[in-house]
Amino acid sequence: MNIGTKEVDIIMSNTVAELEQKLAKVLANSRANEAIAQKLFEIETQILSCKSSQELLQQLLATIKDKFNLTGICLLLVDPTPIKYLLSGNMQTSWHQANCRTIATEQLQTYHPQRQPFLTNDITQIAAILPQSLMDKTQSAALTPLTLEGELFGSLLFTDDDKNRFHAELGTLHLEQLAVKVSLCLSNAMIREQLEYMAHYDRLTGVANRRLMEVSINEELIRQKRYGVPFSVLFIDCNKFKKINDTYGHDCGDKVLTYVATQLQELIRENDKCFRYAGDEFVITLASQTYEEALQACQRLTAFFQQNPMPYEGAYLPITISCGAAASDGKKTMDELLKAADEQLYVHKKAVT
Image 1 (cartoon, rainbow, N blue to C red):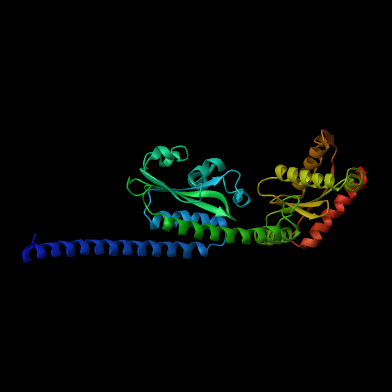
Image 2: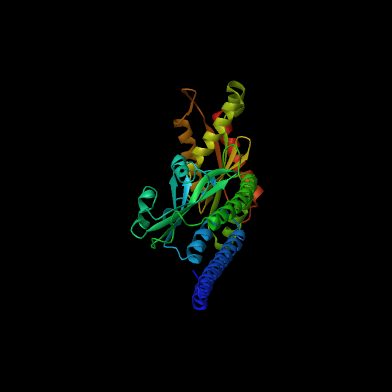
């Protein structure tokens, strides 16, 4: 069969049109990928400047939602999470309640068995983990795994009201790149915060250490001079602590210190602070409290330990404390204030031993 010139021209014209369409599609995909890459770069730049994991998480979720025009975004954290200590005290904020939720490790692993993103437009597949606030406006979703030191600790959940936005056939390269960058940034933030935590908190009891106490007391003394508000401190130590160590061993002694620190933190007001000073000694700062109020706090704390022995090896171990109080007169230095409280503690200790 012979093909005439006209037919050849038609074939050539169709071929050129097809090639032009393919080229246009390639160029469009290329431009789209460049746009996504630019957005990822902007996200990375913003989260790299964050000074804490708390700031990083807030900035991350807000920026991703804005840059990619998502209907919703949520951070899923395995329970227990390796970043729990970073979020403790913050998990009850309105921001965390709105943007974070916990998920069982086994449940999260079903979505990321190979640590790969999971995309779907079948919402029944994620109904069990989808926050109620996103349920009515979600038609498709993507789960991007987050890892720390190779361990899966969470996932970023992206949702959209467009059913075609996320689906199983969609490429996941950009989501994988995002997951790596977020995990690295979060890991760096955690390392910085761990170092800072170790520098300011007692490893055994978890309360703030002497270094942070000095900063806190000096700040309160400055506030007192400026505004004339009262300020008091309590000096506390455990009675017969050496005898406990000698009789029951140092492991028991450590448990006693942890017990005392935990109870002290629970017994003081929210704006008061507890510090481990040294050995079995603790300091409590009482913001806006007079000397009389500090004495009342002393009585309340000593009475609690007298009435609440520490559970130990199926029995109860009596633990008592001695407590001294001192109030700032606007002239005392931190050392003078602590010395005054320590001297009163010594008087109290002689009376009970």
